[in-house]
Image (cartoon, rainbow, N blue to C red; front, side):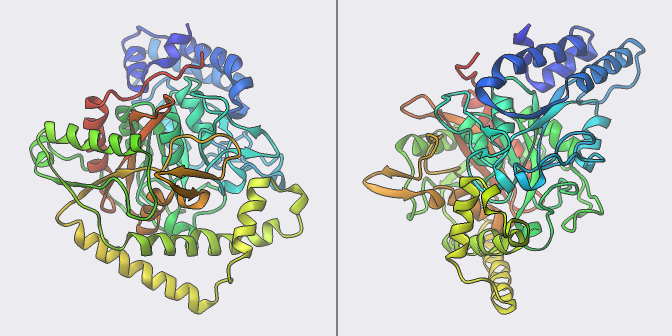
Amino acid sequence: MSELAMLSAVSMAEQIRQKKLSPVELVEAHLQRIERLNPELKVFVQVDTEGARRQAHAAEIAVSRKQNLGPLHGVPVTIKSSIEVAGLRCEAGTKLRAGYVAQQDAPLVSRLRHAGAIILGTTNCAELLMAWETDNLLYGRTNNPWDLSRTPGGSSGGEAAAIASGCSAGGVGSDGGGSIRVPAHFSGICGLKPTPGRVPATGHFPKSVGPSGLIGVVGPMARTVSDLKVLFETMQGADEGDPSAAPVPVRWPGKNGLKRVRIGYFEDDDRTPVTPETRAAVRAAANALRCAGFQVECFRPEGLELARQLWWKFFGIAGGMLLGPLIGGHESDLSPTLKEFAGWVAAERPHTGASLLDAWIQRDEVRGRVLAQMREYPVLLCPVASIPAFKHGERSWKIDGQTVQYLDAWSYTEWFNLLGMPAAVVPVGRSSEGLPIGVQIITRPWEEELALAVAAIIDEECGGWQRPPIN
């Protein structure tokens, strides 16, 4: 029965429509898998067992009555515990919000329900989302289904581990500096960081407003790109609660037009080295696209180092200032990872009005320069991070004789938060220890469909998701 939980979300929905699969049976398969694996993985904040069963029975009745069924009808999904799901905990991994229960669904959750999805529960995250690993004082440390001694990443690590292990068919994370993409890469699944406002961040905590709204987004995570597409189509669309929202229609590229798109790729940024297997994964993705008929050339935009520096001024300095009133005076209630982040911020000079304005202007200028360069290469391929999933507690790594520090390893994702560009991740390679390695596909703002279309080709040509060893 547990094998049902390893189907793709698209296949689940199709078999339910054809009455080959029961929503009740499917939910029970997931609940059994959660009961068996969650004690080791620690991915869930709250499992809504009875609620999921009620939703499954309602979905079963809808099928028997031949009602109109949504594209995710009967498909069990999960939501990161920084996003509101009515009746479930939304604590963002911090004791400072312990026991907080959402009173209503975030708009994206309502849209998933309308499409027929069944909400299984909420998943663990880094405290206040400020780490690239998932560990907090409320629910403990989440483990990677590929190797329990390693992290599935952060801050959406619970979501990634749940999906990779078959405890969920897909779900939603959030990303201000790689928090969807790094967990997808570490856990061997797919993820999409959209343009700010494309998928409404209304109902997310911390709120995506001000500097956070400039770089922070919510987006889908799944085992296949086909599943990402369905989740994206379901959740996308403007909402008045998101200040970055815009009424952008869904526009999938035609096959002929798609092949005329030029693709640029780079294996590193000349600052932060990546592992040999990471280089090989980027080359494999580039070669797969060449074989599919694309023109693919070496290209790395100028301005990425400035983008990295400016990203920290928004995520680190401004983010720390925004969180300061919440965490100040509560140091004993903070996890070690959040204390570490607070220490990095404390070492910086706080923003003045002038310094924040200067950073904002520089951001807009570098964004314009990178976009101008992408006229020639509307799609970019590059690594997701310097390394595959790291062991719990590690803070530096040796690559090609150079030490890579914790904050530097994720610069490959941070650029695109600062620049406001969509970026998808698909699994492509393996490390020498058998850990998954993803590749990042980046497009210009509001061109998520192009990123997903290219990602789908890589997903198909490079083998896509593979089952982790945990069972």
